Amino acid sequence: MNTLKCEVLVVGAGPAGGMAAKSCAEKGIDTILIEKKPEIGAPLRCAEGVSKKMFKEIGVEPKPEWIRADMKGAVIRSPDGTSFQLDESKAGAEVGYVLERHLFDKGISKLAAEAGAKLYLRTWMTGPIKEDGKIVGAHCMSMGEPLDIYCDCIVGADGIESQVGRWCGIDTNLKLNDIEPCIQYRMAGCECSMDFCEFILGRSVAPGGYLWIFPKGDGVANVGIGIAGTFAKDGVRPKQFLDKFIAEDPRFKHAQILEIDAGFDSTCPGLEGGYSTDNVLLVGDSARLIDPLTGGGIGHACISGMYAGEVLAECKKKGDYSAAALKAYDKKIRNRMEDGLYRDWMAKEKLCELDDETINELVKIMSTADIEHVNVQNLLIVIKEKFPELVKDFEDLI
Image (cartoon, rainbow, N blue to C red; front, top):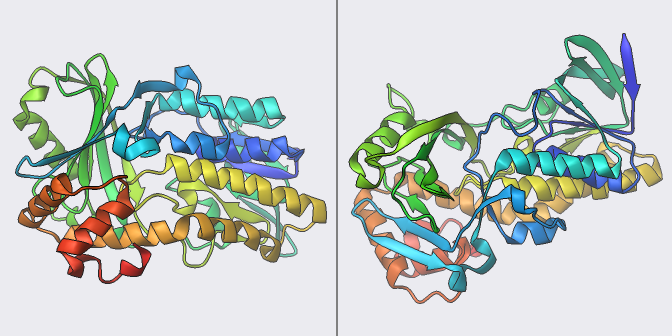
């Protein structure tokens, strides 16, 4: 049996795992980063949108090769065609980039490697190693061969299908209404704006979710959809809604599909039981740190990875990776994210209940409101003034 030893093992080299490995290695922690795929960042399972302010928060300068398109703003559209356009003058850093995710993910892992982390591809965890009931490492497979990696702490960064949490005693189960099946086409020959992301709402368009157009320049765009899991039954699939939209929108009359991506998004308000336990913590999608309303997860992934390194550096100093010591990580997550996650989860739950007529009215209100700075919270303030019943269950968070 081949064996390796390190202080921190990071499982998964997406944005969360890459940032966790970078953050740990920069603080002098002996770090191993493993990735089950032969190539970091591929295949793509992402709409590739990210806010500009994220890079400032995580202290990473975006590389030009990571950025496919710099958006001027976004358009929110209702089923009847009413639109609300916001540009950078109102949305500021909320307006973002459309990435080349495979290059972004590789870039973050490159920074981790430059900081001293050791990377192993085609290597995946198959279960925890336990001694006297304590987790002391991970059973893995690497290039088809068994490999045991002994460590002081495991960072689970293995995405939406995460097994690390389940194996190690962290409850990451999701309810049906907190799962969104998604499908996306990367399309060429699109005649939509290349300067604005677009979000189309409505039960007839995307029940319980939304349809998106994220342009990548030169007539190429990510065109995708996510619908609430509670609507995806009795033969109803997101592909049906996406294909109908594309067939009826003249902007895609000559468009052709270059790539198809499909998967699931979690849309829960965070993990009630916490994000860590003895010798284990979860980051990014594996910790369900995805915005329930937008489905965006890159920002939270990177921030949680950064927090993991900060807390694990303190754990190393004290020689303590217990659940009590790792509660500092849970506290950082709750302070930074959980109010927003819960507020957006409640908004998502209400969105699932709304018919097209109500959504048409909401978008009209947004389009005529005088909002100095546009973000989810300020949009909900405007909605509260006209439809207070929609936000009464979480108005204290607005």
